[in-house]
Image 1: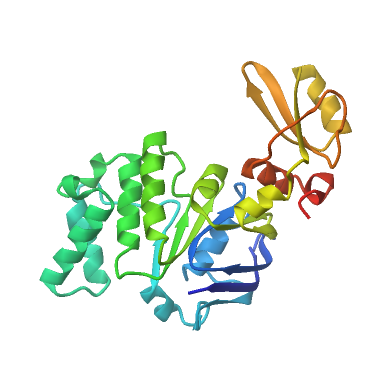
Image 2: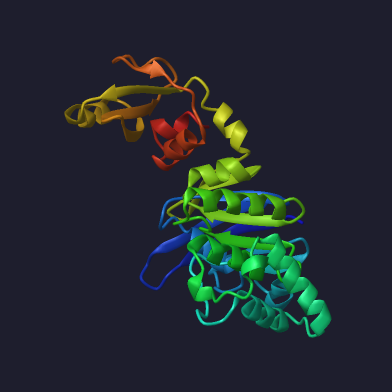
Length: 297
């Protein structure tokens, strides 16, 4: 089913505008929401998960009114928040079984079948009798997905799921999310560009409560083809280049500073053409509504 968000706004009591008329259409499959810390991603995730009220706007999942029909939404929702607590002295099986009871799986035999199946799916079956306090970060995240999948949800919201995971666990978690996203609507909120590049058929970039860009990752990359330029500069030259050019990113590479700029034509100054990627799209967009973002319009 399709998730339709229209003109969603939220301002906190301290005056911070977390969401400013956010409008998005999220189809079935994996959808990536990219943005830096403080962009409004978690506020949007909590609102969609029926945990937080908005000030105005509408959200529909199919025919369900997400803002007004919260109990009905929770029956089809799976949610993995950015931070979630676990009882360290309880085993994975015991806690997942407890969550299954809360989800309404009262028949013991059926519940065992579901819990065993989810532990298999998340590659935790062999450690199902291990206490959660001994789980690694990646194992905790996979357990979080297992609990989010209870009740066979059609809408799954995951907030910063790979932050802090080592490379091996990130790959394992990516594979798990890919399998889940084949027949459900999965909204992945993250500030890690490669997560979206690897997993999502559709995406949006959000910053300071505004949706700045949305579309298919490859089409957004195609839009900057021939417009990304790079060169190495000395550290003391960086400020000068930032003043003269639309610098969208800098990184230290082999002890030297590599900068990327956006320009419709050769900017001179020794720049060479670079093959743009989703990271360039992201940085150009976050740079603001200026020369850097214009190349993407």
